Amino acid sequence: MKANVHVMLKDGVLDPQGEAIRHALGSMGHTGVNGVRQGKVIALDLADGTSEDQIRAMCEGLLANTVIESYRIEVL
Amino acid sequence: MRAAVIVFPGSNCDRDMAVALRAAGADVTMVWHKDAEIGNVDLVAVPGGFSFGDYLRCGAIAAQSPVCGALRRHVDRGGYALGVCNGFQVLTETGLLPGALMRNAGLKFVCRSVALTVATADSAFTRGYAAGESIALPVAHHDGAYTADDATLAHLRDTDLIAFTYGSNFNGSRADIAGVLSENRRVLGMMPHPERAVDAATGSTAGVALFQGLVRQLADA
Image (spheres, rainbow over the protein chains, first blue to last red):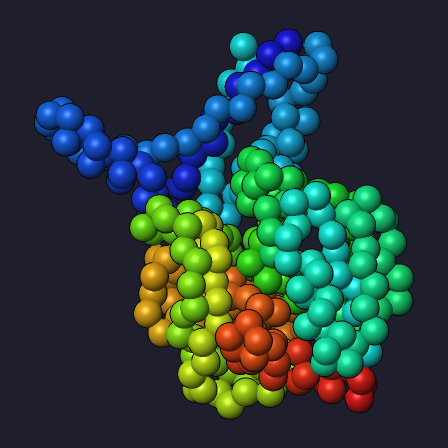
């Protein structure tokens, strides 16, 4: 089985890289980009039957820093 | 006073840390990240560098290494720990210190000497300085913007756990924070490098008081 973990900075945590991307899009002439948040996707190739609880433990323990990041598990 | 310096793949301030501790009178051993035991020491130092290539997040992989289990046990039994730069990132990733270090607000790696204020002299690490004293130490980091939620920041302020603040906030740290202490004041994490300021030949001796104060207090203990 495969699962994707989407890791994003929590709302309210300043994202200077997202801000830099927003500025760059503006300078390319793309108007109306009101905000950009940058995150990452971690693609997991897992043994069949891996529980969502186990994936959540991976997220809490390593994949996301829950002080500043939120995560979303997408089982494919 | 006995100290151990952890070495991760990618550590690059480990030997400077050992030199600084030895110069202050400590008996120093180096501990490899795969070692599950640190031994009986007074202080564990987590050095700067780019442990595990800063993969995933700075310090995140290092925080899962066997030696960090030993570090956690050392701290749990009241041992002292000092994390500098990447070492500070490791200490936040292990949860031994509150908050997190994020990409600098200006998105640039900053490598220069910066002005700091010693925010508290009430710790083994800062007892060699006066509270409110201004010092200059080198910084060299890309991910040094200290971040914590409002409640954590208020708690740090209220309980005098902010050790150092920046004179000029160049990296976007909340509350200008350059270094914080643990609840029991025995763990310090800081982005500036005191171990790079212990010899006049390399430009500054502003870090000497930190190591001497620490060695003196732990030698007395």
